[in-house]
Image 1: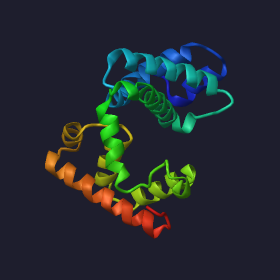
Image 2: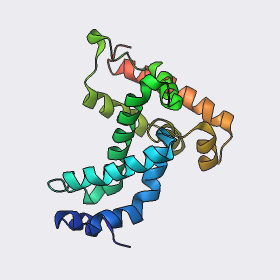
Image 3: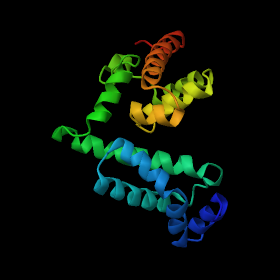
Length: 187
């Protein structure tokens, strides 16, 4: 199997083997991200394919050799969230809506113009918050709010009880709210 640098070089050469190698190396993980958000096999497959197309269009000029999987994960996550937004009127994807409501406890409403936060700064602040947490807490937070895993899946992966995962997430949301307030965010 090729390493990330070799795969990205195939994209730079405009060699379609890069897409095949990407699929072989990361397809399973990308589909898992999509399944956590969409839970619909046809849409998962479409999002995976769209991820490869978008990676093809972004490389070059970008060179994500040192962070290739996170680069792909971000792409597929955004594509899946766009699908959720399109389907929101159909009242599908309850998990996405549920997770949004969980985080609303510690983030201000994006519809309130006076309280809108610069997205990039907010991301940096949340990242700084996560860097103050233990590896276990980071894992639980990211699996829930980045990968959209359900509580049961997180508990299995972390080898914890579901109640421990729920309690940890509750405490993390409360800590995040306090952290954001200390950083000057009005919630």
